[in-house]
Length: 308
Image (tube, rainbow, N blue to C red):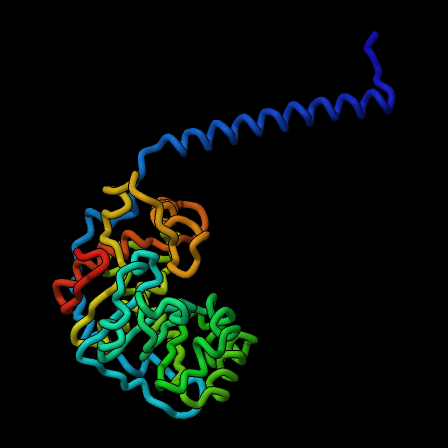
């Protein structure tokens, strides 16, 4: 005669099965994660079978790709010498502020501040390139980033057209528009949808990788470097490490990713995790720097602190 389970017995039986399944899934996840952690680091380098296509960025440049957020200003900035100041903590302790401020044009990124860091990064700003994800952080500190009576800086906002495009009419675009109308000393521009596609195509041409298919986001550094090449005859980059820095010096002293966030994530850890990440979207910092190293030979780009 078969054994029949009552209601409580059936519930207990189901609980045992669920518990067993939970334990099995946990073991599988742990096994999978251990295998991943033991794999050798495989950089997302420029595709080895990709025939590099040399892009003349001076001809590639198009001022029509930057539209005024309000008014009818033109993106006509051109500089003989530029200082591109990165957000890396490698700029700390350099004492490069005076040299930076004596450069004709100074380019900065996102919400990297100057107040309190003038000795190392200077205080002058000619152009700031701001990602859609950093707009709110910039707006929260108007005295630092917007209300600058000592200069008439330009800001270029980049991001998905659905967020910053004129046709989007979204909250973020309206905020950028309000900033542009409030601070008349600023010249605010946004990157057009067609120009955004050209930035993607440029990444594909220079690396052999499709940005979207490879689950990548272009970094603000990528946009800033390309824009600097467009508008500058000579570029001196402060604080950017060479492509092999984090592999060659894996045991070196940890450095915060941002100079203004001393308790933030480690720079090399951030680079390596993003470079090797396969799930979700990541910045390919090391791949971008490999391209920058090649561009340096074409466009009068030098690197300092560290020098390479």
